[in-house]
Amino acid sequence: MNKAFLRLSEKQVFALTIFGEAEGEPITDKIDVGSVILERVDHRDWDGKTVAEVCLKRKQFSCFNEDSRNYGKVLSIAENWDAAYATNRALRECCRIAEALLDGSIPRTAEIAETHCCQYATAAGAKAVSWDDEMEIVKRGKHHIFFV
Image (cartoon, helix red, strand yellow):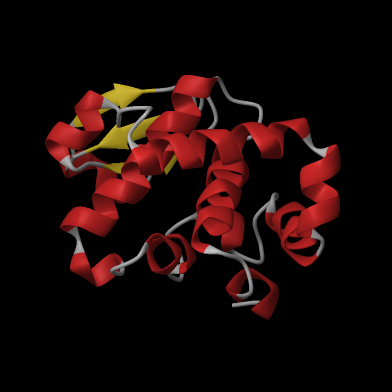
């Protein structure tokens, strides 16, 4: 894990994960991604006990995988947080969503909170991963499928 990510605050890691996983997606998809993260903190100890631990756990959120299409972008933001925040409207939106999810002014997505589901991001029409054959879909976003 790059040290730049480890220097961020809990809220910054949360917002950066939402950004990295759902940049360009509707606000509802961003809230869905944030809801998955908070549910993992609350209900899946092996993922981590804090938002940052859950977000940065190896191979859990693709934006932190060095071979992902968004890795360079999220790393650049982490290395230059203040400048990125000042100039990137989508990042500021993700920060507002992260803060609102944390303080409860935006409720977690009901389907996700009720089932403690996980997320899988896929391009529309792409073949899903092999482990999803045994999973039940609880919600579909623009480019995300949420399983339980």
